[in-house]
Amino acid sequence: MSNNISFSAIHTFTVVAKELSFTRAAEILHITPSAVSHQMKLLESQMGVTLFYRQSKGVRLTLAGDTLKQHATSGVRNIQHGIIQSQFSSQKEKLIIAVIPSLCQLWLMPRIHNFCTQYPHIELEIVALDQLADFNTDQYDGHIHFGIGDYQGCEAKLLSNEKVYPVCHPELLEQSGSRKLETLLEKHQLLIYKAGIEDEPGGISWGTWFNHFSIEKPQQVSQMWFSHVSMALFAAKQKQGIALGWHKMVNSDLLSGDLVRLDDSELATTYNYYLVAPNKSWKNTAFTLFSDWLSEQICD
Image (cartoon, rainbow, N blue to C red; front, side):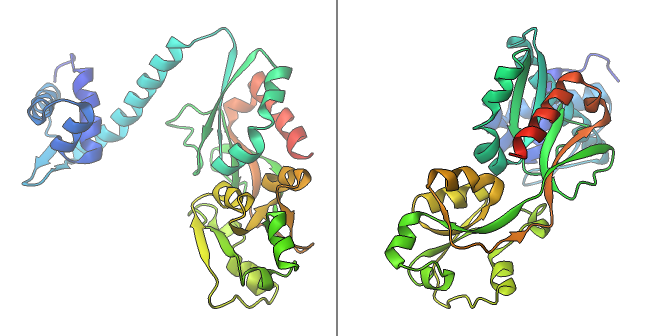
């Protein structure tokens, strides 16, 4: 096996391994399929192994190819990340924080300037991420996550509980003259957050709400579905219907009058918000400062 393996070929391999097609990889990389084929033959020759089973339509990874994919994909991503970081390097301490998307948009972003003002020596990179960060392969310092708080190989700090309740734009209540959900749904849409695989067991669905409060859902109710909580809540602010508001995400809108609660009914979620991080992060002074700031902010 040659020690002089081409990085360009490794990069091309990661794209082929993902797409399982020389043609699609060529389109993504803006080179010809023959150039992709040549690079893969070169890589196989340099490594002394067969990476692909060539088929009439596309390719299939061999065991060696699958093994290389697992390591090469992570390696290429880290190199690309390193190049970007080096281009914008500074003397500040840097934290890379993943956050579940809706909480990031609706709760963290309006507050993050406060942290930057308090700790100007710390530089933040915020990444919206649904599923729990893989701290073994990705360079995250921590993840503000919605879950059960039990994560193998990581320490999880409870930040806050969560509760939900129906919300809508105040004009919808004025038009209907009623705060009853059943009455509102005769004229307005049900805005539904279609929970992701990971948080579905811990969230509160409209079905759960109807069952708990013995409310009969109108047969002809109009519905609209969304992949993220923030999208459903934005639609509610645009007078599109009634959504289940997550308290941490809608409290500021309630205070400003952009949204209103229908009544005092509410349900607590099974899951809660946690700051999850590997042990090494909790020994980092900058990360500890961020953790303490986060706890103060989310309890407000």
